[in-house]
Image (cartoon, rainbow, N blue to C red; front, top):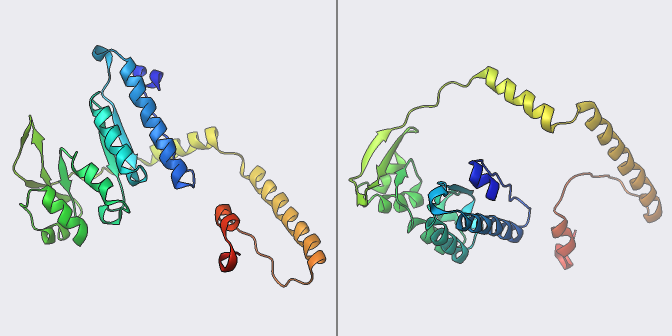
Length: 232
């Protein structure tokens, strides 16, 4: 992380561990390391850092508030995303984020999110009006040079048409760097499937007659922790 900050690179962390508690720990550790790395840099060479957190609600409110307060001292800017503020299990997480919002851009929103967005816009727009916005229109309330500006609306520019040649080049590069030949994967799948059937035949011979064989993916923690009527 020290080198990434010094050289101006990007760091992408996949924190989807399958266990929410592990995800919280991992995200907290990464942000703490960013904090420590920024502390070591002299102020004159400290870069502007943007931290983008998807599904930010996985960090509990106390840790999120502390991290925001600490990292903003070093000039860090946060961009956070979630499916909907009304769906957050911990309402205090939403309060932490909303209390630190500097610029507000409100696109089309449902009834609950519309109320929150309308409040952030200073009451200049009714919640119902937000629900009627078209895909490329939004309302904005900005803070410039410490002063809150009047709420206004505008239309955002539409994304240019995709460059199909660039898409193909990205696909080819990813395939070269990350993918294995399809014939190798298919061979391994046949081996696994054959092994599964042979094991089923051996085990079914020990326990009696079985009419069906099922193969699929399930959550091991659900199986291991289920008891009584909840057991598979």
